[in-house]
Image 1 (cartoon, helix red, strand yellow):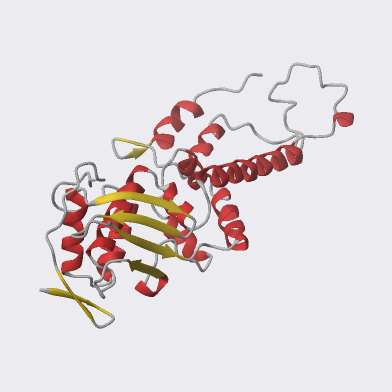
Image 2 (spheres, helix red, strand yellow; image 1 turned 180 degrees about the vertical axis):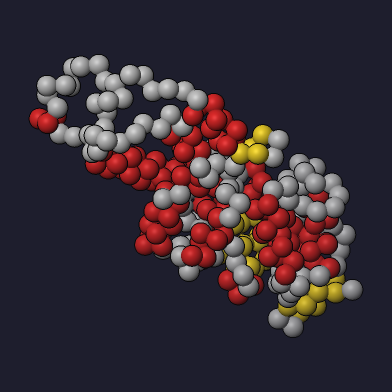
Length: 275
């Protein structure tokens, strides 16, 4: 059997085994432990790569990938094949523009649960919906949205070397979901700093809106605050002892299939405000 490129003819040789290569953690079955890495694999499989994916998966498990590095728009991997010199593979995707990232960051910061999950190092389950609402896609939808090339003589793209790099890239997404966002142009540090700043600005704006000017409460500022003098906007407002549970809205915490907030609410409502 032979390989073709630019009219030349090459003979397949025996793959040179590697002792200290990067090996996929998965030894059999599917590669990818989290929904976001599996989503990336699904994208690859939708491209109809066929047997090349199988050969690439075997390469990834055998440790034929010598190195893998990710930067904005570009993933570069060295893969040992049948020749003494490892093949250089590149997997590129278009990064979002600065303006697009501003829209993404404001949308993420505007949803407390999304921001909380990202700050905790998790990828929100429906984050693709958020991107879609902005007219963007986190994962490529077609092979045309990715650019792949390899220095091997195989004319097929992706070849097994590229496929091996893609599988290890998927596992790197398992370890750190922020690599997906870094590939699209925003590092973990920059994104989290931006989200903290946007969330902090929003909280400060709310605090400024709710708090009265000091000149309006000089006569009561140093007095012990009670439920009767905390209502600056509406003196007839009623204190709800269960109001703190409203902060749990949208947070998927359940006990025995029931919402934690719903379970706690009767106990909170039984409390009486301090007179």
